[in-house]
Structures are given as C-alpha cells and as structure tokens.
Image (cartoon, rainbow, N blue to C red):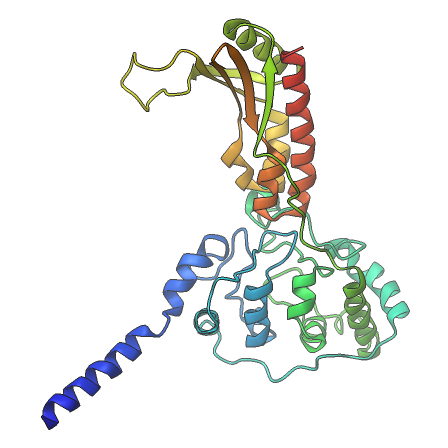
Length: 343
C-alpha cells in the first residue's frame, strides 16, 4: 500500500512537470514566424541581439506580448495564460541570461528641450512624430544592410511596456548591431538624454491607437445589368483601364471538381497592376496573400454579381497602420473598377 502511494505521488509529480508550458514550443508557434526561430528577426525585430536583451527587462517582454503594438505588425496575445507568457519570456531570456537591473518607471526631464533634441537626433529614423521607420522590417521593405526598422515610439503598446529607465538605457548605451548609437558618444549630456526620455514619454498623450474595423464587408459586390459574358468582358476592359494586366480567366471551381464539371456561371478573372503590387509589398509583404487582384463574376437565379475581396477588411487583420492607408487606396480603386464594369 505504501509503495502504491509513493508511485501515485511520483506520477502526480510527473504530470505537474509535464503540465508546465514549454517556452520553446510556444515561441515557435506564436513568435518564430516574425522574429525568427533563433530570434534573428524578419518581419519582427531581432530578439536575440545581446544589446537588446541587456536593456530589456522581463516585464517589458511580458507586457509587449500582452499589449502588442496597436496599428503595427505585432499583435496582442491576449489568449495566452500568464504561465505561457512567462515561459516564452524565459525562452527569449535564454539567448542572454543576464537580465538588466530594475529600471526607473519615470525619468524627470525638460520635455521642450527633449522635443528639440528628438528632432535633431531621432526623427530621421523614428519619424518626426515618433511613428517609426518605413516598412515592416523584412529585407524587401528595408535596405538589406539595415537589420531593424526603427520602432514606433508613440505607440500605446510600446509606451505601456517600456519604463523610462529602459528608454534611457538605450539612449545611453545604444544598440550594438543596429543603427542606434550611444547618445553620450554623440556628445549629448545625461540631462539631454533625460529630456529626450521625457519627450518620448509625452507621446502617451496622443499615442497611436488600434485601428477600428467598423462595419466593412469582407467583399466588395456590385450587381451587373449585363449578361455573364458581357460582364466578364466589361470587367476585363475596366481592369485594363486602371493599368492592370490580365493574367488569366478560369472557372471558380477549377481544381475543386473533376475537369469538365465546373459551373460555367462562376468565373474568376485574375489581373495585376505591377506598380501597385510593388508599392504595397514594400509596405507589408503579407499583402501578397490577396494579390494579384481577383474579380469573381457569378450568375445565379438570373442575376449577375461582380465581387472582389475588400482590402480595407484585410488591412485591419494585418495590424499595420501604414498598410491601412495603402489598402484604403486599393479599395477605392477596386470600387471604381467594379462601378465602371457594371455601369
């Protein structure tokens, strides 16, 4: 009986150990696609940089996972448990085990002086209003010799996660392996650095907020007064008129049913405006998921419908404010094309 109790206790202990979250697996599942399996970066910043981890408290990493970066690429992982977040942070910390000492929540400084210094020393990379560098961080949207895009400093997620002491540490020491150099080496005093920190903290008054989804339909739809074939030809002419090159025309069910059994009343027209494609891919390569442009023409119960995906809806899912602007322009272009095709 005694042996049975000992064995049962051992099994219970083993189950407890097994139930603990695996940080490496959680990181691979939730983080590696953007930050790289080894933390070398990609769409996301390189997390394994020693200079980054030397100045990033664990609390900063935890809050970044929780809050994300509203309006940018980094989402908020609200569905993870506290234990799972801590496990991911422990995995990241494994690349540089020495965590920084406790950092001051607030650093006093002259905000107006900081604004002047920010314009002279920070705005070229981080933007005049702290909105961050252009692009997402992947090599297609930045110079290949630039390992990281300057982050958005006026972002609500960043400001909620980063204590003033961390911002000051970055300014004092710079970030080896990135374009960020020490402000002390640039000739600024500690009082100057405190002023810049105070100015960055002032961004909290007008920090970038999450984009609103609103009531956008996932599909842009128009009713055509023409026959199916006339509508297809009209869509093709409209696409050409907006500098789209026709790629192909195929049945919607192509490849989904045996050849010859496709419904001829459901047709997809593929086309591409290569300048538009190049411009938006530089903003965010993930936009390739819904490009080139596809217009579907369907005849059902005597009515011909023309449909295309709504870029406004998709841009919200991608969480990139710069992409929102590009997708707004794309949506207006698609609406104009469909209007012209169904006049």
